[in-house]
Image 1 (cartoon, rainbow, N blue to C red):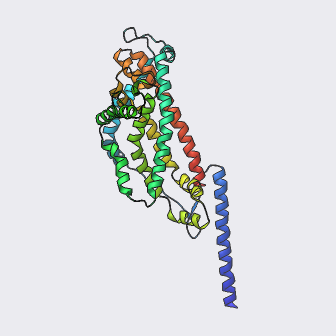
Image 2: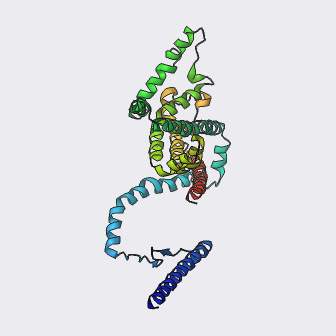
Image 3: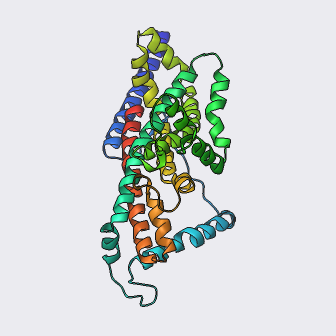
Length: 340
C-alpha cells in the first residue's frame, strides 16, 4: 500500500511539473506575440535567469582607451569630411559661400554627363553583379563534387587575385586592342577587326574583365558556405528521395542565403570600383558606354567644381544606402524563413 501511495505521489509530482512546463511554454508564446523576452527553461523545466554583469568604470575607461585611436581616425577621415561635403553641396561656391539649398543637386541631375555616367554604371552593375553571383555559385557547386584536378581548377580561378591591376590591364590591351590577339584571330577566319574599346561591345569587354577578376574569390566564399551545411540534413533528403534540384533549392539555397547576400554586397561595391581598369584602358574620356560615375567624379574634381562634385557624391551615397537597405530587408525575410 505504501509503495502504491509513493508511486501515486511521484506520478502527481511529474504531472504537476509537466503542467508547469507546458504553462511556461504557453506563456512564452504569449510573450512572443507581445514581442516580449521569452522565458528560458532548463532540462527540468526550471526558469534560467541570466544576471547582467556590472561593468566597472575602470573597465569602461580601459575599453575606451583601446577604441579611441579607431574612433578618432573615423571622426577625422570619414565623419568630418562627410559634413564638409554636405556643406559644399549647399553653397554656391567656396568664395561667396551663399546657401543655395537644392540648386546644386538639380544642376547635377540635369547634367547630361552625370545622367550618361549613372546610366552606364547602373547597366554595368545590373549585368555584372548577378552574373558574378550565379557563375561563382555554379563553379562552387561543381567543385564541391569529387572531380579530377579539383585543386588545380581552384588555384586557376583564384590566380587573378594575385595579379596587379596594371598587369590585368596590359593583358586586356594585348587581347582586345585593335591590333590585338582577338582581332588577329578574327581576320584569320575572314572577319573584320573590331575596335573593342570604341564599339558597342566595349562594356561587354569590361564585364568579362570584372568576372575574370572576381569569380574566384566569390567561389571560395560559396564553397565555404556549402561545406558548413549539416551533412545529416542532406543525407535525410537523399533518403526521402529528393532530387538534386530539390536538394539545392529547399536546403542548400536557404543555408547559403547569408553568403549570397554578402557576395552580392561585395560584388556591387567592386562594380563601382571598376573605374581603375577602365581608366587605365581608355583614359579620362572613354567611349560613351564606358563613361562611369567615377569618370564624372574625377573630371569634376579636376575642374575644381566642388559643389557639383559634393552633390553628386551625396546622391550616389543615398542610392547605395537604398540599394543595400533593400538587400538587407530581402536577406532578413529569407533568414526568418530559414529559422522558422
